Length: 81
Image 1: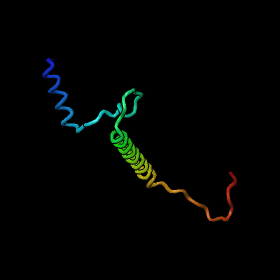
Image 2: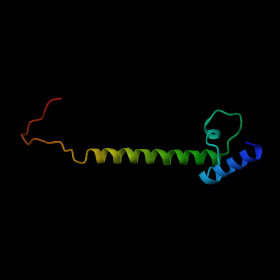
Image 3: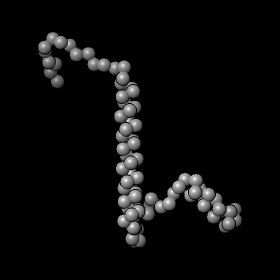
Image 4: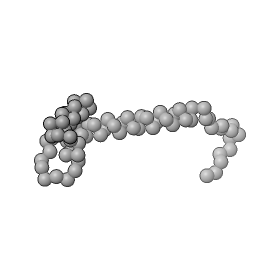
């Protein structure tokens, strides 16, 4: 692959995925100064992904246990733990 073909492939990938920043530049140890906007964008992205992960997990457990109910006896006695 020539240099021109490589650059074209990278440009096409970036255009298709919409990547505008390198997230590792905001996370990894570096001697460079990372712009505050990049740090903020990474934090927002991370928070969004974590919220989606938690929602997906909660939805999974709701679906899994939707048909399961815990029978509670009305005998007035509490089981000791």
